[in-house]
Amino acid sequence: MGKFVECVPNFSEGKDLSRINAIVQAAAAVPGVLILDVEKDADHNRTVLTFIAPVETAVEGMFQAAKKASELIDLNHHKGEHPRMGALDVAPFIPILDTPVEECVKLAGELGERIGRELDIPVYLYDLAARREDRKDLAKVRKGQFEGLKEDIGRNPDRIPDFGPNRIHPTAGAIAVGARRQIVNFNVNLDTTDMEFAKILAKKIRTTGGGLPNLRAKEIFLDSKKQVQISTVLTDYRVTSIKRALDELEKETKPRGIGIVNTELIGLTTQEALVNYAIESLKVADFNPEVQVLETKLLKLLGTWQTGANLLIEALANTDPTPGGGSAAGISGAMGCALGQMAAGVSLRSKKLDESQRPSLAGLAAVLAGFRTELQNCASEDSKAYDGYMRALKMPKDDPARKGEMQKAILNSIEVPLRTAKAAFGALRELRMCKGIMPHVMSDYKSAGYLLEAAVKCAAENVFINAGSMDDKAEAQRMIDEVKDCLAGL
Image 1 (cartoon, rainbow, N blue to C red):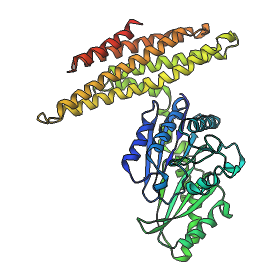
Image 2 (tube, rainbow, N blue to C red):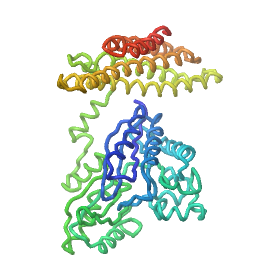
Image 3 (cartoon, helix red, strand yellow):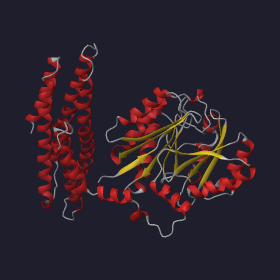
Image 4 (cartoon, rainbow, N blue to C red):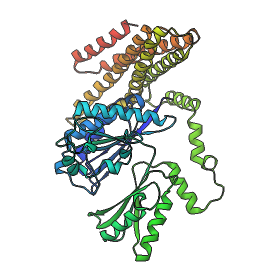
């Protein structure tokens, strides 16, 4: 399995759905980005987007979110309960699966440099990506928020950013880009409006006030609910768990007759944090979640490549219309790229490698990674294209919009396999130009080529059959000619 990271950009808009959707779509349009969650809050006036992406495209996904946020959000007109200094306020990379945290630190540096250079927005690296000790703590980086930083930056040498101009962006502010481990964003809503008490309470329980370790806490008034909220971040939930934080809050609120109305978990939360809460609350002895939680055992089983391969084959074999030949073309192409990456990677580690051929092999591995992500996306989008056609087909026949919607769907059903053919052909061309593949992986290298050839041919068949249903015959012929060019190059 390739290396993936979790990305959790927080942007300063929690009310305007059109803006929120535009920012989410900007990230989602990047190949390989898989949106997991969109958590918006009107009181905080903030949205937390969570997606995963291969390390090869994670920076691009974050950058596009930052770019779109900077176009749509003006902090001069932003009001919300949550501290913020930027339109895209915080952009952390988080390691998942087997990705080392060092990879996330590297990605944070790449993103920060690009935002500063292309968007002209100052960037501060924080947490594990921080290059200064005093910038590890996000709260210190964001001190003063947009308004305070606007006055301080350019005058105070301590506020010189890591990347970008030494001045505030007039509307988008500044961005904190970082690398961190999994955290838990945990809010507790109290049955009181007493903000003075809440302020004392938040200070008492947080780490900087002498409270629990690895705990950030801030008092917030929820105007829509007329309630006080203690917003916490457990920066290491193994040290300070959800239950421990909740117990500490209750120890202070119960004597005053203040009840907990409810709690909130913001964004995605790790299973481990929730299982730990259950174990602590139930006082379970000698409980081992690795072997005693049914879903954990099932996920381990389903996570093997053999099980995944069997599920894919079964999906292709059933009588449902999707996945079909178009998806199979994308899968074949992605497999070809993956095998090519493996052959290049193994060759790069060989002691017999001619050093002059190292750049060619390294370049091939990087290029194939990009093509593989594109082909994986095409495999999924092909099924969606068919679903879109079926939705249009089911529209009432007397609906004047039906014909136009069907033609749009047909066009999409041609464009996706055409993209598949082009990507597979591009990968094949790069594969053929590479020198330095070691003899013991030459069969894998050749197999990669055969799979990519099959991808082009399968995708072409889908272009041909769908083009016959296009009303715009000239456009249909143009796309047929494009895919024929790919076939001619095999």
